[in-house]
Each structure stands twice: as C-alpha cells, then as structure tokens.
Image (cartoon, rainbow, N blue to C red; front, side):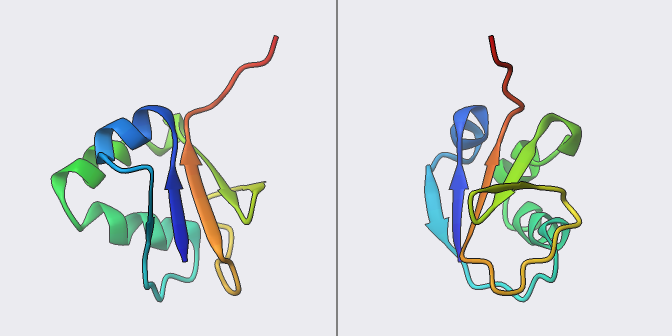
Length: 81
C-alpha cells in the first residue's frame, strides 16, 4: 500500500511517500502501526484531530476500512477561500 504525507506531516516524518506492507484493518490501525515505528511517526500522528485522511483519493474517517485500498494519504485540514 502506498502512504502519502503532505505539508507538516511530510516535514515531521521526513519523506513524502512510502510503500508499506500492513495487516491493518482500518486507518486507525495503520496509524497505530506507524506510530510504533519511530519517534518521528509518533510526533506526526500525535494529534489525530489535526489530521485528515484520504483512502484511494477519497476523504475518509480514521475508522475507514482498508480492505482493498491501494493508497492512504495524510494531510492537515485545509481551508478554502
């Protein structure tokens, strides 16, 4: 599965994207796996209220299932104008 990081999430983790093998059932499970990797991931995912997620380019919640997903993207909330 491809994981994409945008804006300050990318800055904290230090990479824009990576490919991961995961058995995570939901986005929240994936986040738990990533947090456990290293401090930089723990810092990036410390406050989930400050993050948005998209699964296969569609906005999703952290309880969204990952079965069959090919891409998950994490980014801060955006405001329009």
